[in-house]
Amino acid sequence: MKILLLISLLLFSFSLSAQNQKITEKSRIEEIKRNITVSCSNINNIKCNYLQEKSISLLEDDIKNEGEVIFMAPNNLYWKNYKPDNQSFILKNDSVKIVNNNGENIMPIQEHLIFREISKIINNSISNNTIIDENNFITSYEENENFIIINMKPKKNKMKSVLGNMTIHFEKSSYLIHKIEITDNNYDITTITLSDISINQDLDNTLFNF
Image (cartoon, rainbow, N blue to C red; front, side, top):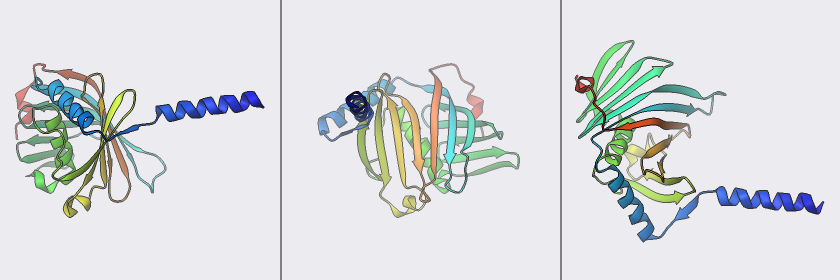
């Protein structure tokens, strides 16, 4: 019985050590921001694969999408979905082009709030700009052995109407984005995980043509 109790205590201690630790020291937060900026300041373009998983409270199984993301400085983003549907989102400056089986549609990015915020985060995280928009979001910081985690809650009512919370995971080894978690106002959760990241490769500029 004592052995079982000891094992239980050890497992409990291990689970506590694996949990995220809150970061409240201003100097540590500034260090994190600085490390992300330094890591990303020399990036002109980035290409990676992504897995998007959406958990909807009314559905038993998650919805999954796979594809690739390509960023090219200063403000071009190509978001290509391969599975299960073939469609793409192209951001160029302040406009978004959506291509799917129904054809093409070009709209101002202001009309696509969540896509705008995801694009802004990716763009800012790999350029020499402010990483976190603290004018529009309430931010808090956490860390564990492998990741820096930044939680963002919108301040403005317009964004609150579609977005409850956004969490960004940065790899400690590189200070690049590994994962973005988005909780909408219906408490449905979308998780975007990035993989196979390549930096400053020769890319086709025509990907961003409208």
